[in-house]
Length: 209
Ligand code: ADP
Image (cartoon, rainbow, N blue to C red):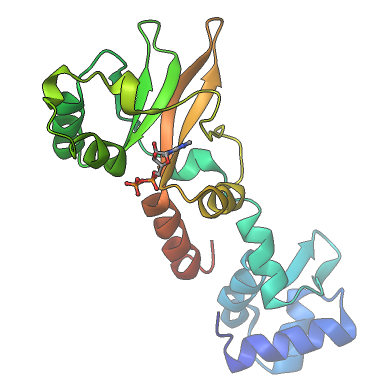
């Protein structure tokens, strides 16, 4: 985030004289309080300054990289997850391929009759199954999927940064977002490398949010 000259001057003033009112900052800079309003709004929203009612503005002492870290630590899976694409474990490998194309996803999550998560299926799992001269319409996905309890998963309130670390460590493309039900884990979302890439772009563009 690039601060303009006046914003930098405001930071210097609050460092030296804070807490200081908007009126007093305006006086020091020889401008009206109204002129200053957008700059003060940007500086408080982005975390450089804090404002206390009837006290004034003060410098938080946070560097740009600390502010970015604060923001990353507030990004939870719930804000970035997508709708999950699930298949029944009795579905055939052929049906799974069709689902991947129709739903435009690279990973399918596999559930049993009670809609409980039992596995994950990637593109390479399907490619591997197609290497032999087998009829893909007769192979159930339960035979070729990765299965519980070895599925890496996450919850809606987990941090995006922790999911990103798991994707790297485990060398996988996505995780199911799950919720505990009486019967087991229900798949309520998915978070993939694409979601993380989107989060990364938003982080850079939504500078003042
Ligand atoms: P691809 O195989 O298309 O490159 P991945 O890298 O995601 O896709 O998958 C690699 C392997 O990891 C596959 O065998 C897949 O079944 C498995 N896998 C995919 N997602 C998960 C997950 N969330 N937890 C555990 N294993 C997974």
